[in-house]
Image (tube, rainbow, N blue to C red; front, side):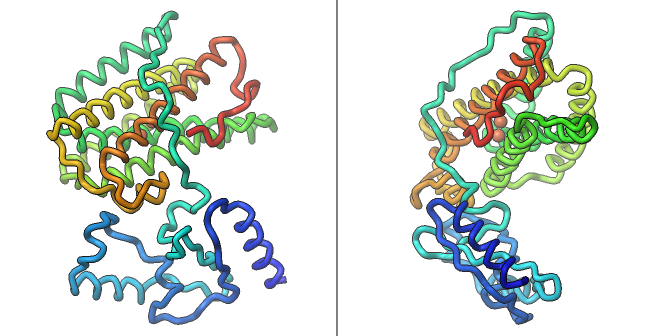
Length: 322
Ligand SMILES: [Fe+2]
Ligand SMILES: [Fe+2]
């Protein structure tokens, strides 16, 4: 039975991983001293490529200590198969798998704008513009910090909307046309933006405090907002995404003009967006901006469905729309 499960899991992974190879670990290892298996559970502190080869001796010791403290699977039979990248090196991430990485469609139109027509559209548009004024006053030209803080908020709406649709599906014994998955994918994608930005910008204690406060307010406000009017809530997010596209365009301009140093891309970004090994911050911001443009389209589309007096489940969800 156990053999069958391992074989089935491996086959499923082999089917799903398009460009990556896997080597299944048939039996969990019980070495508490680290080794190959323990390294899967090691949380990487930084993924900036230039730091990897120059890791100081004390950090290496810290790494070994963490390895030895890594959770080792035994009785429960929890074992992640060993995954390899295309170049044969080990897949280093637990937070996303090779088949979840993708090449961003950067050809998407980044200038698109939904002209607000209805009262609720105008309300959503003006609310976002008001928030934009506040954020510009606070961040000014601190592009990296602005992006990082923006992402802590951007990951909330998809999760709230996906959660509410999930509960509705359970409550009403109904399908949702794939929208739960599409919205949760958006939230996860935003979180990966944050995991990338935090490699480049370290938040100060007062910024962390601001994030905690903003999350408390925004999560609850958006939760109520979505229950009251999903139509307006999706339009609001559509406009937030339009502003995110504008912010990342300004970030790109600052890189091009030399105001912001075009540092090497973090390793997590190279693997997540399948970027070349020598990718830079400019490449990372370009793919993030494309993601934001896709989120903009998804949310304006969702709002349009509601504007037509229909439910989201009546239109196929854009799953995997990047
Ligand atoms: Fe984002
Ligand atoms: Fe976004």
